[in-house]
Image 1 (tube, rainbow, N blue to C red):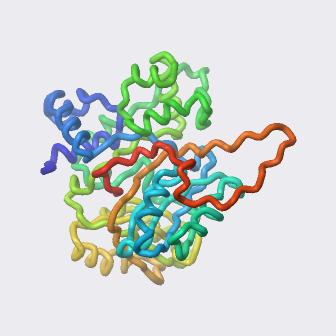
Image 2 (cartoon, rainbow, N blue to C red; image 1 turned 180 degrees about the vertical axis):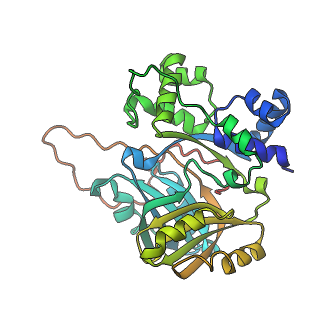
Image 3 (cartoon, one colour; image 1 turned 90 degrees about the horizontal axis):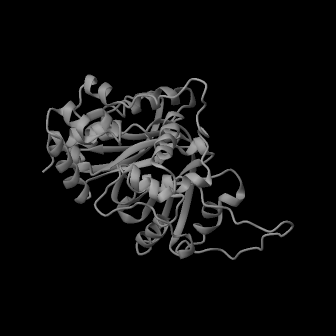
Length: 362
């Protein structure tokens, strides 16, 4: 069973996913071997994994939260097919297993909205779909639920927080905030395992270890690359996950979002388009705790007109690769031929997603 040290380890890795075990051990007052052993046990059991991720808005991607209603026999199949696509993340079966909640990231323009506009609506078993654009994130990304309840003191957090990369003042960041084709092997390796060694990253990229270190430092300093921890919710003794859709008066949206982001139950909070314009992913110890949360703090949020609470039955995929799929290159003057509607299960769209059995979305 997880204990306080396990929770503190996850918290430390959320602050700096590449922090040396020796530093974490020093902060927690245990040996390096103890931290390495705990990490190895939790990692092999599928209880945690460090992942290097890219902020989508910084590389020109727009996030959409979609709800897909399916026939009961088709929901799991559609969800699994969505999980194989590189532009999807945070896929969950909800509403008794007949609805899918999913994040899709696209670039601006019709060419990159094929999944939303054509593929999903025409997929067998899909009966309805809505898509709401994420306008502002109040809590999420580099911040996690573990930041609220991980058990580290303010002093320990400060000691673990990575220092800004040192560099001569006249040397600018190397391609700050811009992802190139050269970065893809590096980012793919870090997305699969954020603690991949510098020697293995050098082998994957063909760069020297010095170049790898410098590029990671540049991407982190620019805010483009951050490290997140996938962890099983049982590490925080939480058993019930739900998504909330709130309809909030526009004048109170910012205040409600900020207040919701401060609740210990919320793992992700964002303002979206649509009649339900505030979205949250929440976790509770049990259904009674969820009921108490809904009838107390949620009920007291400013400007809330309506709340829809939806239990999560199963998580199919957490975060995925954030680099957008390559556009098809055409010869000069050659036009793209019209394509027949693509089924969501088309295996041409398969890509490594980093999904792992045993991991549950926070």
